Image (cartoon, rainbow, N blue to C red):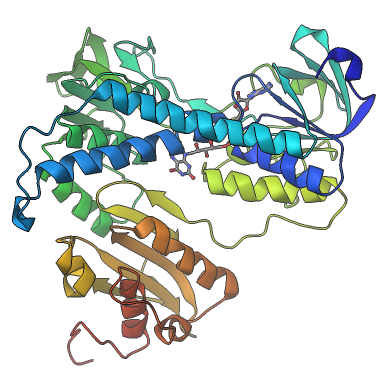
Length: 456
Ligand SMILES: Cc1cc2nc3c(=O)[nH]c(=O)nc-3n(C[C@H](O)[C@H](O)[C@H](O)COP(=O)(O)OP(=O)(O)OC[C@H]3O[C@@H](n4cnc5c(N)ncnc54)[C@H](O)[C@@H]3O)c2cc1C
């Protein structure tokens, strides 16, 4: 759009074109609002260009590579399987480009005015864009996301010390890699490169995935060991000299690259929030109410910038809610369940809580008893289901191949207030991994089929 065409005042200005922002813009346009969407960088934000999509793309490639080299048990002998890292990189970049173009197409089709540049609030009703363009709005949505958290002494240089974006954009395969951090991003990146043949070290201040269920972590740790990943737990990185990282216990480890994956920090730099009444909490997250309104009621906020869980599907849901609220609807962000998936091997997917506590029982079905898992030699894992005294499902954890696809059933169950009986009596297709969810529910309901839990 050229400056002369700029509308006097838009109904909605969305700052940030990531999954939170562009979904909000699309929903608002569908509702008949005149919408402007501003992003400093690429449409689709981090998820499409640097995070979820690139990481799962590369994980898929690493799985194919690893399987091709490790399928003798199935009678497959594939000699000389090699990796063309440049080609892998080109595929990964092409996927992001295609998705970015898809977002651009949808914006155009919905007549959204898209601006490339940084937007700064100069008041509670006006943004100034790079180049000095003023954009007046009736409502605005802040969807500026997050950036990789930095640690002192490990400044990103894009060559030796990498953030997660750079680690997912390499056009060569490092021989060795030190991953600083042990959350889900660190585990995904570590496993993916280990499967490609990189020697991987993971540095964990306390332990790998310290905030996750230990039963799930035990399965992953076993797999990491089998992949040759060396976990250095209970130590902190102190400094580095080239690729050699000095640890707090006096030891040192080396890698061709050092990947720092210690979390995400909400991003509000350059936003000019000081020119509004919008408030942030001590961690820097923008504060919102149940309708995602900030302290300036015409300015809403969604996605990573408003807090945990920092996940794309949460941002998308909030984008829809914020657009509807801005259009005058009474929608609120009141979802009971936000599923989360670690794209590890096996995958770990969780929704709600599976912690055993007063009034909550937990039943676990092991994949060793599942036909499909035995056929695929993928029996490392289980499904846990937690339910209250009325049998209502409170949480589900799936540690399994295809867990990413199966967890949606559990999220729906929790949103609908379904019981373990509802899941147990629903016919699940055979032979599939999804039967494990049904089996866990059957056991919870007191009628286990393919696993003997002993006489109760
Ligand atoms: C390696 C990795 C893997 C991940 N994998 C998954 C996954 O598998 N599933 C999942 O659900 N989540 C995943 N996530 C998290 C997911 O990427 C984020 O939750 C999601 O991108 C948040 O979307 P958002 O719209 O809030 O912000 P972002 O995607 O960060 O988008 C914010 C946008 O705002 C723009 N912006 C910022 N300030 C301004 C300004 N002042 N003016 C104009 N534009 C501005 C930025 O350029 C950016 O494009 C992953 C994260 C990482 C790091």
